[in-house]
Length: 612
Image (cartoon, rainbow, N blue to C red; front, side):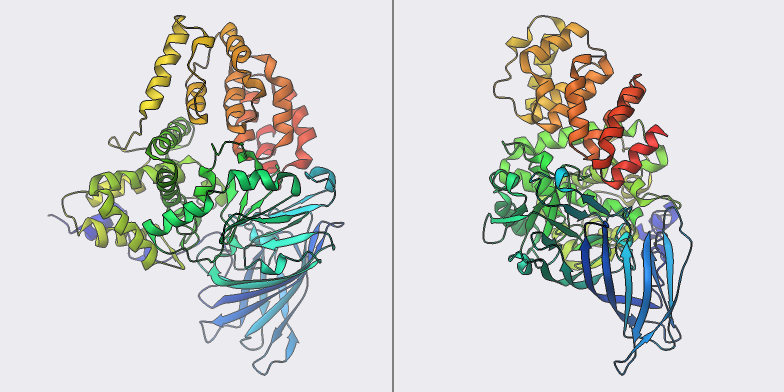
């Protein structure tokens, strides 16, 4: 019997009617009873004790008439007292229990009321080990004059500095008053006009509802410089001008994306340049993306990261994955939109090179990831949602959307994506809900192009389908030909036509060299191109990975500086793994012990696990 498309998907396990609704295993929150609709934060940034101290006030929307309990997520928070407001506006003490700490979910905070309260206020402080905060001394910053603090709330780290319903299945507006030392400027993922005057007392407002993982804060010796009427950079003075020069195409990116996918919904789009210890390339906090300084290369070669964080303004921030098992809905769409932005602003050739590099990275990672974790709709089964982050949701998700674009044509697919962003603006979406929308608005409207069986294969089966796109670049084909000539001995390194090579060509060249390259070949390359001293962090990383595997010991003084000077996990964790696997564990451990105090807690946890 031939099943109708939805019934067929049900039979294949791709969609169940029950799974259309979000069920987030990583939160204690009792969302069926009560939802927080607005937060007011009143916090003091205490650099001496490395803690945020004050209160959070929740405005509550009760959904269950019989409920008298609010359950919040916390991790490593000290709760002093809880009060609640009655319907007459009077405040009363509330009873609360803070449960024992679970290694993944933290501690459940249960608050009990005598009546359904419109507001509740929790007085608390974070602890120095908060997983979502990093505290830097003045000596650990570029300016050396003021301390620095910043948050990283994704995936479930908001609960380490705010008692909150910490799940992307809900959305909340927020406002805040933040107090800092007088010479420290605070900024947040909100309207930052209250931060223009540096006086130690700052007010913020975020009028659009966002999931809690997008609540963000930073404080340090920050200056401010506009790039356009809609964009600006907050940064320490030492990197401000270089960042403005590097990222001054941001307005063009916004303009191009609005044409393709609809209006930018967040007002301003500013960037906060973080210290080198930031564990990620960027974080898409709305109105204020957090950015690593490792992408300030001086030649705009790594600005696809800005395109990626901007793309999240549509995919992720506007339409959000409902659980962390649906992460690909955020990152796959964002990687796809990022690449479309790069094509519009910098041309098709560069966009395809970046597609190819990402696809090669995915192919390499698929060999090391357990097969069940190579599915787009991942099953975490209680694991930390940080485990969901790999090349799979990003690049496999992107390739799936490229596949659909190629099958249906760009014009048709663009309208579908634009409609998807509009239909689910300011909502959280499960994979099942997306599949239903895809079936109704693309598959059924253009019958005979792509089947729901194929959709199921992409989303719910491990690995890549046999007919997955394989992005190839004519530019890289030329690099490959030169590489083969050099490896065969018919050309010397000095004869390679590298004068006009882009960073992408260099990365393709290094990443595709044999992992058992002869020592004299390594010396020849390094002597000719001084790769060990490369100032481009991506090129340096690729070279160090090759050199560690090939036993090229000349890199080690520079590698020590690299590992000690930056905390971006992408650029350090694989190197520690390679060192351990190539009999350099003791050297790596000694370097790590010196570098660890400057790493973010997320990087510390990842690398601790490698050595343990």
